[in-house]
Length: 239
Length: 361
Image (tube, rainbow over all chains, first blue to last red; front, side):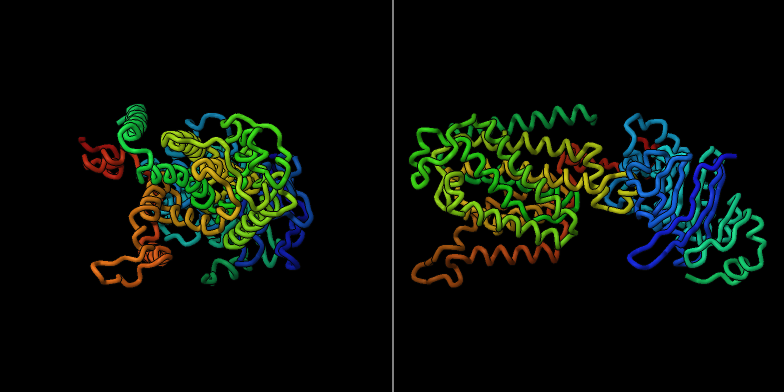
């Protein structure tokens, strides 16, 4: 299977601080790949540099074989990759429908089909399409953030901690959605601290620590790995 | 009510308003206070909406409005003073260097265009700043522009610190209403377009907007340029209303007045800005005038009432609004016929949606 996303020797730094040090990983088409790790491991920085919000210091990022490192976000997003940002970041003073339309900002064609698709995935959003996004519950906002990202019709969706600050039952709902989106053919790169859920949803996983990838393997392998268990599953740190 | 029906009602309302204004002009003497209020109100409504486009819809806190109005006013004046009058207007500068005139409509558009060009140039360095810093930088720009236009060396163009006058003005109250109306309609269309949605997205969350593929620098620049364009047009209208132009008119106090209108009306509400601009003008030019006059009731000299007291009262009003009515008259809502109908018939979108379409009405 071909890799839709290939990251090679990526370095990201903020001022003098190196957040991501020489990491490489691949995301095969149609799979769920997860990056797990503690706070400050560099997971979010990796995603932000892939979508162009931060310019990488060095390294290459290939999307479908095309170099996107250092390009502007609007160029990158229009190539079929999108980010569900950490902490949801929905547009609070816009309605749900407007949020979805913003998600499709780079597209000029009709949105009808995609809107219906999103409403099928998230019936709640259809009920509340006129409501201001800021008045939705945390779980609904996360659904909206995912739906908004889907509206750009991406090949690959990157999600930055979609379970952040949500009740366990809602987290399960989010992961059901992730599996469903994947089943419908989208590739997913998932960043999580909730290692347990993430590894069980993922085909492949990478463990990041202080800016480096220290372990990799299939989801099951990592979930069974002793050091991963000790660090993330057994005595998971409260954040 | 369908969209089409609402549009018909809106058009009918606007027509009714214009007819009412026309009839008023026929009946009342042209010096009546109400015309002053309406003319100035319409002009301020336009500049308030243009400021709202930037501050309320794009989230860029700019205080350069007076500067762009000045640019618009001067552009209009310079381009429209009749050639035979220039000798008298530019009496210290040999009739000035501009030796032609253009039609009023062209001059109005040129007024906006000059303001927009300056906005582009100023925007290049200034739009990298955020919130308060942007406000300070734009305020500084407006003050610098004002000083530059009074500079003697620019006299052949700007007439230095002397007045510009004798240019075509308007008599009818309909004129500012129609020009402002067209401009505000354009702004409203912009706000409701994909572009406007992107502005609002930037206001709500810059990072998320950028992640959606919205080019922040480009959109901020466009909002700044468009807002300045209409500030320039309103500056030209103000020049027509005042019949003379002097740079000292466009002090930062004018920007604050406009900011006050925007805040009272509701940051992020076009109709709020329009309503509050008329309210503001009615109060400041008419009803609260008595605060500035020494008043005697019989032989009793009413304390506090003297020149400048109006400003004190206004300051108190601002404080009260900021403390207790932070959302202004309209908040981010818009005044619409449909909204009024829904209010009276008790039908709201909320009710329908909560019932999920199962409702019987």
